Amino acid sequence: MDLPYYHGPLTKRDCEILLLREGEDGTFLLRDSESVPGALCLCVSFKNLVYTYRIFPEKHGHYTIQSVEDIQKQTFSSLQELISKYEKPNQGLATHLSRPIKRMSRCQRWRRSQMKFNDIYENCHSEYMEVLP
Image (cartoon, rainbow, N blue to C red; front, side, top):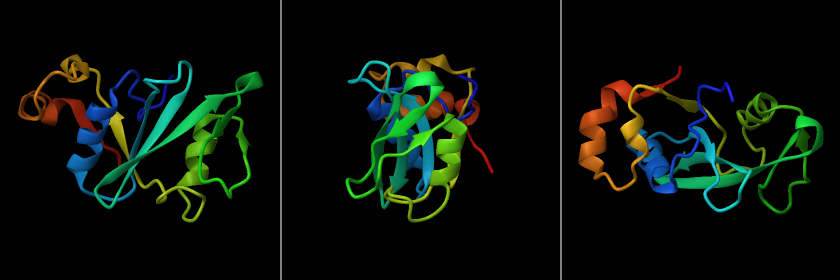
């Protein structure tokens, strides 16, 4: 997957550290679901919490997203189309997506969720994470 904000098998805990460290509503990333094989998670920060929405692959390379119950299920032809929709306010997420966190490949140690926050911050802060404009 060639999306700069896709982080692969990032754990929920590590994801929360990344998103909450920014302290800005609408910061987001995509990661693999830990509990549902084949699904992705769209994770977005809002009011010092991280909201997670599952994205499910459908037939022919399409995707659906699990959002609030009152919103009709929608199918997207690509993940880029899905992200683009949720960059607009009032689409069924806790907040709109505004600042993607780009994955940098130089610090693979990030994925070791046993590491302490201070170790992660000291080792990866400058070389792992970049917030896209």
